[in-house]
Length: 290
Ligand code: UTP
Image (cartoon, rainbow, N blue to C red):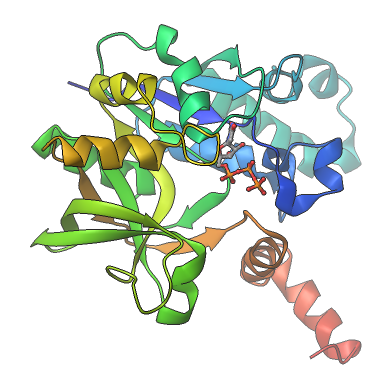
């Protein structure tokens, strides 16, 4: 069973980025020079995904516009814009490798409910779920790492990342039984536990492989604060004796879900970017910013 489809929910409220998210979904915020969504689509394509299902708010067509082939711009080619047009051409090439569809989530009733909206486009197959908040810089794409686990064990797989103790209370933290290097069976998920009660130091990153059974559990939700959450469905499944695996991702997690993490991730990538970093470093020195 191959993983061919990825659901990308982008219908959240983006509260942590207000007021900007009143008009622009955070998935379109740039990380250096590309929107977050662009990185996630690249990750999907590089992991062998052929079909992307975007879950958006009704009438939010930015995503399809962004990935539409841009003939007009390419035709108006001008020499000094060559570099920019090359970037556009790279995007066109990326889009050629994948098809997009869109479903709507009328109200932001939770990440699990958003995923459920895509169910009608998923047949009896496992698929990926990717959140744009979570970019991973790695040799092997993070999603491919999850797919490799799925191919072997055929269970849902959740991406995990080790964090220092003082950060655990801001994340979903997993209770685990170690299976092998970087692989765990998940025994439960605690949402934002206190530092003392955290069951491990492994946090959930927004990348998953889900099986058709996960949809079944999302349809009978135990609502947490009025929302249908993926974490809730996984906890229900574990209680019923279903196996869920966690894969500790190899790479660097670049969080983008709140303002300070987003700024740090930008800074990290900008100062490593072959094209921008020399100039930026000179600027920092000249202005004595650091
Ligand atoms: P988040 O937990 O980051 O929530 O959602 P959010 O609403 O986007 O942001 P905050 O917490 O209000 O600041 C994880 C992913 O699930 C999507 C989001 O767009 C994001 O990509 N999501 C969340 C939905 O599509 N619908 C929802 O109802 C909730």
